[in-house]
Image (cartoon, rainbow, N blue to C red; front, side, top):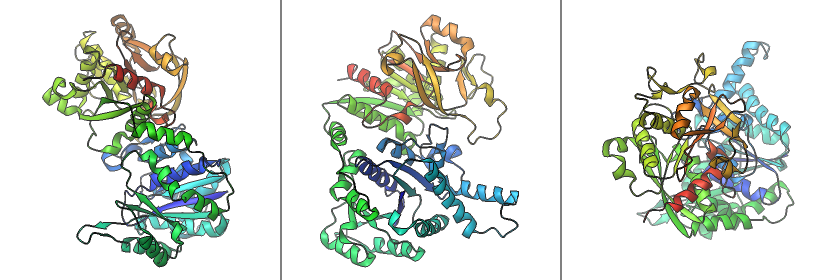
Length: 534
């Protein structure tokens, strides 16, 4: 087994996750089996209860693990299916150590960061190694080198390299090369200091990936090489990408990063086959059509809150030879200004998942506007519940209809708490999570788009479609066309005589890839193009 560890220095948000994912793409396209994972130093056990303003999107895996959004990048950029083993936080590490201490596993010894915490971190790497058939495991270390909370992880990796052999481990360090406008030059000192800090810990990077706004010339590369004790060719520029993030593997391949890594790890492979990837990038960068689609949510100001939604729309756009111009709409603005002013120029409306009652009425208004004006509508998780509430109020005449999440005393609880959630007290990892099968009605739009009457999709919710109202809905034109195999849980609703009105309880955005757009997103963008304004 070969191991690549990706660290970052100088500042956060350098794009370590993107760089790691891009390396995964390149190695996979060389015929290697790649598995990716993320180690995060924060003390939360997982991101499941963290605010999107703090952490961005919670990404859900097949096995129900609530993970860092970077795992979304990993699954989109590679073919590997990840599990709860592939996201480790300090919270998990310390929780496991304390549990073992309480059980007496340490035989009364004083429990310390070294060796007990570092051993727990190394154990996770070994556990993943034992269950994978991958050739390479790529691990991104969250945070910035020098952060106090990240030190146990780096110490564990230093030990791990000694234990498995230096020939089997490569370190990639991402740094910032800032441009000082007043001096009109790029500065290498922050990178030098960052690498020095890493070397103090006992880790010498094999590759330095340099984020920069401007090209890095040979003189700067030589300077970094000299001061950081690294070969000049291993100083790899990673300029800001102006087109699409999916250009990242191509940019890094231009600097032969994959070749450098293969040489360092003694891997003999063919040249990467990037034809399919290049074609996909070309469709994104040079589309024939453009279409405006509104995403109506409450975390609109935070780009990462709906990361997988935005990426899935990009994938679907590429599949339809179109650029999707995403109009980010704060649902509260619809309540204040009305839907006509906010949504008049868009060709389709998507309402994503979410929790909490802020902006709910604006979302309900947006769903009504889409339904009444024959504008393609795609509801995801909460977006399905919104569609149900809107239809109940305005078509079925159920005054005051609502979800019990937002109004426990509603006279018409058309959305209600899942039965197995009624006794739950802890919020973390207690929702209906992970991949579940759904059965689709023959002849439905959804079944047509999927090309199947059985699908497996990922979920993250506590509330469900109340089937006590199913007959009322279907009599008025809102059809329940997807259910759990036992028929108890509602999974998909549609309005058949609408150009495109599909709402799903699951999260299809978690299974879309740049070279294989999710069929529902693909169909949604196609409908938006047919309804294109202007």
